[in-house]
Length: 161
DNA sequence: GCCAACGTTGGC
DNA sequence: GCCAACGTTGGC
Image (cartoon, rainbow, N blue to C red; front, top):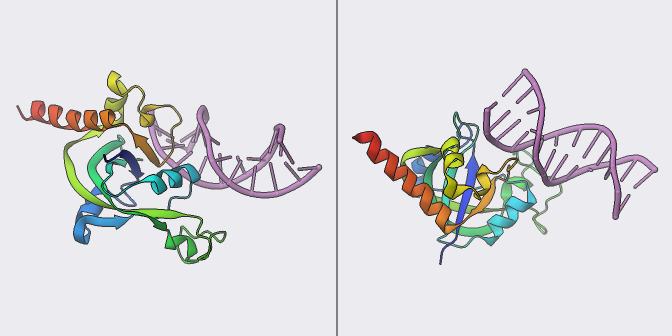
């Protein structure tokens, strides 16, 4: 049974369209430098489903669906002094940070914005709508995942009428 | 641009 | 081990 996650990215740095444009639509999720977020990635299994969230957008929104195609492995950017994600405390023998590879599955029929998520009583417990929730990789329940997908379809249909 | 939330660092 | 200072995230 695949599990469900939400992963944040600033679209000006890396957007869902950027992921779609990659060969094979896959890319490594490097640069996570928060232990809780890292631990979530280390728990990910191949085939887990991901809501691709655009933070810092106006408004912030879920843009598309992705899936995990490679489970956690050492984040090489932490070892590269030239990388903006370089962390001198990491070492090849003891990598401190890990990443997963994800693949774009589909763009949502329309983006689902943070205000909409907040307005949906079914998503009251979803982490992204909680105040002060900054974690860049978050677990999402199966129900929450399904509800976001449903919202994207429903209002999209209504909008086209 | 502001600032709340919160993780991390480092002095003690 | 406490906690103040500091840095970052990210919504607004």
